[in-house]
Amino acid sequence: MICQMVQAQSGLRPRGDVNCDWEVNIADANAVIDSIFCDAKYHGMFSYATDVNGDQEISIADVNMIIAAIQGKELPPMLSYSGTMPVLYINTEGHRNIDSKEKDSYIHADWWLDNKGHEDYESLGSPDNPLGMVIKGRGNYTWTLDKKSFRIKLDTKEPLMGMKSNRHFCLLAHADDHLAKLKNTVGFELSRRIGLSYTPAQEPVEVVLNGQYIGLYFLTEKPRVGKHRVNIEEQQDNETDPEIVSGGWMLELNSFDGPMIYVQEHYDQPWDWDDMLCFKSVSPESLSKQQEDYITQFLTDANVAIQIDDVTSREWEKYIDIDTLVRFYIVGEITDDLEYFSGSLFMYKHRGDSTKLMFGPVWDFGNSFTRPPLFGVEDLCYHFYEQPTFSRAHWIQEMSKFTHFQQRVREVWQDFYNTDFNGMHLDQYIDNFVESIKPANKADVKRWPDYDIDYQKNEYKRYIHSKINWLNSQWGTGHNFNSNGGVKRPQND
Image 1 (cartoon, one colour):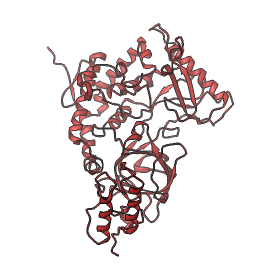
Image 2 (image 1 turned 30 degrees about the vertical axis):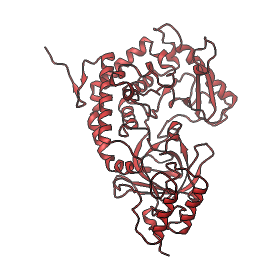
Image 3 (image 1 turned 180 degrees about the vertical axis):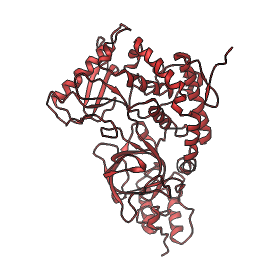
Image 4 (image 1 turned 90 degrees about the vertical axis):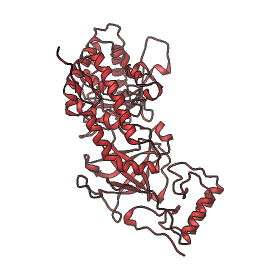
């Protein structure tokens, strides 16, 4: 019997190896036949191996292709990585599919990282000496897409892709980012430039899962408490000491897979679920009654102060740190993120009754610039919370009415803008990023068909220029953003 073989060193299986034994033989044909009898349907990630000929169906044509391989006929090669950036190899235990994102659905896996000659990154592990991790799916809407995102927990802390050593990372597919993978990239960079204390690091990487290339991903730090992440005094789960339960706290708005704290936003109106603030406690993860009572009362008091009608009131600033709020808010406005303040919103609080709720880190810009494709660039002439597409942006409408908030927004914006985004040189930053991922994106598009990346890049520039210019008309710098992304200063008479 003639079999197509593949060297383990490559990490890639041969075309037609359906059952993950690293060769193509009659067992693979039987596996496809079993799939056909079970009425298996093509579904992106999970059916990739079984769909041998790549026509997005599972049928007798796939069996015929395997038989051709067994007969010694040369098949077209499997899709592969570009080799222009590091490659992360992951082999799940028993080569199981990652088909769940539930909390208890982690799968054990071996992994190694090959830097592919990039000296800026360290290779970790090897095919012969892999490292360990557990992995599961992640995401809400994005989990419904064929190209999946994953959450990983390494067995030991590692400095993956030059990031600070940690066990907790995400592999983000950005399958919904049809703007040249710039949504999170620019959002994160703006957060760093504007001076928020922690912004998740991310690095592009090509991924091979169970011997199959699955595309360009973004290895990203998961927001969590830690010395090099959200650096607060961590309290124990189920803590009861009243001196300790004041902090630190890390909270997320509208995430429903942990202990929840509920506060009705407009407390003086009839109960309405859509009006409910639902805070998840990220840390601590399990709450005693003392912890739950403390944080519920703190958030309730903050909400009452925010709902005060007097626009000159600063009572709310006893609970909210205005500096992190303003900087966090401006990043959301620049990127026109319609999910900002309605979901994926992280906040934290240091220990002590006098400490305030601080905003950050930023996370998930997947709903950036979703209005222009539907309504045109002129639809960017609004604050993001004035035209929500699917949910209401909690708190920001009320906080935006306060005169001190408005004053601080103008001050921070003008300082940030007049330093040309602190040397960011926005268009050059965008161009450099897109060039750096272009070969890997080309390989990714063969696996997951998409639009031209240069067109997407130019559309993103057009949107962000339009939004920046409109914000200038609202917050006033006397400057406009020109078509090259630089600052165009007004001419003297």
